[in-house]
Length: 68
Image (cartoon, rainbow, N blue to C red; front, side, top):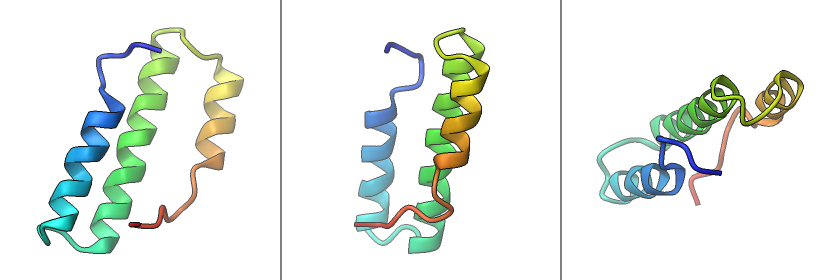
């Protein structure tokens, strides 16, 4: 799936900032969820996924994504 939002690159950059101590674990987890949510929204807006799939995937996003 090709989108303007490069998920892997953005998550990698975010992880690097977290590992360098530039943000707390709570901020890292929040931003990680925000990036994934943005990608889902972009895919829905471009018609790559249906509304039902979009809503289902949004509900499945955990409140906290561990910073491992």
